[in-house]
Length: 256
Image 1 (cartoon, rainbow, N blue to C red):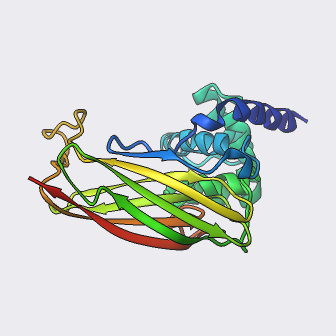
Image 2 (cartoon, rainbow, N blue to C red; image 1 turned 90 degrees about the horizontal axis):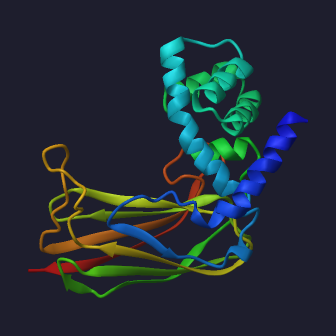
């Protein structure tokens, strides 16, 4: 009964916050628009759970390293709830841990071998569709060339015949200076249909990046090769319910 009430609370929170939940956090790369929310499946629950998972996994790892192996799901997840002061995080943790078992759960956390989408699929808060599909039918990057400071727009249209599972859209950019650039965005399970997505890439240095602390992209003149993937589950994950639906590639040119 307690877990049921918490799940209802998660749903209520999700309804009010779903449109604000986004996985991507890059300064230069933004998910501008996506298909209408009405096409999604269980919009109210899944993105909220993904946010919960993102907040839980690192704390769980700290608890395992600091306190050693805890003997039961309830003990570990209660410790998570106590540390974060969140009964919701504890309950979702308990739901996932009960399914895989405490030993396997600790092993997955310890090896950093668990991703938020799979975590929430185990908790049955994100829909699974292993028969889903998505085919990119249109892909463009505009403008094709521009100076530093230009915002390039990546547009794609895709068609699904069988609907999709919960996944993500990932973008990777190979820059002339070989600095890794990229981000990914939660992509909720969808019904069969035609959908559009738009991602912006602002070609200017991140003012929050401190070159004395980390490498910073300078956006030098040259060709920037762009790869976009639509995935079932997290792109690159080896867990169940994970695969790459389709990939599109293009490029843009930065001039002096």
